[in-house]
Image 1: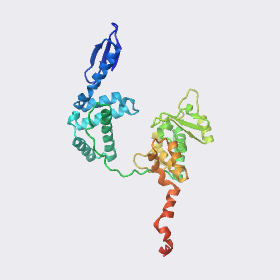
Image 2: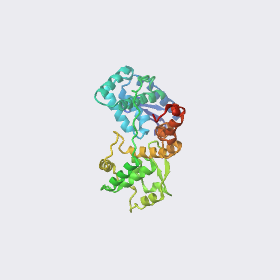
Image 3: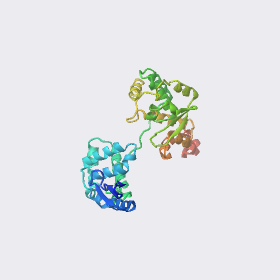
Image 4: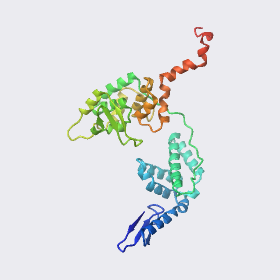
Length: 331
């Protein structure tokens, strides 16, 4: 949408209240202020139009004003359109919670995990909530629908012995970047993608500065001086990145080391390993949050149960502590 001055001195108002697939409205005004007011009036009509618009049009409007600014905006748009294709490209006023519940049952019956189904619901509700907040819609047709209850996911981590076996396995890989990527992941707790795309410009004074992160916030993590020098020594003329892609080589290394991991935790196990050992060795949970770059400490609290103090508290404050002499553990 835009208000642009024409050669004759008048102002052209050009907008699409229903998105790129909707009608293109053009109006001529004498002044820019008049054009701005008319533009707001035309776009203000979108609420009633979207209440009766098809779901695919809602996705288009959402992407135009919200999704395009997200890192995964394109992928989320494709996902939403795929969901709508399965549910049916209904008008918003015709969509009922039962339509989604039928879609979810079909997905569950086909073997899709409850967690994935919950993500589908989040995407849809977020879509409608954004449009409601921006007054494109009068209400969220899926309001009140709750996600499926899930068991807390197991966060697998490597023992010290497994770490040694893994590093030996990585040394045997034909991909010479693999060993160093794994080492940096274990030294910083960074995500695999953050380490794999590191550039030499991100190294400075025995630290690594992680940029373009998942939370969009930069963070700096100190590393051992020997590791810093080893990484700096990898610089070659004309190179920008420190490492080559090596995730497939990591999968092979895990297999060679005979390490079994839960589904979906292949590269993330290194991040879990750093966090778990950090807490078990007495590290502070708030410091860990800053190192990992979690935007919410609730995410970091998943590792709190690994604390030695946390575990020893069960011995100190448990009900049998005051009765152990009377109970007689020696039989």
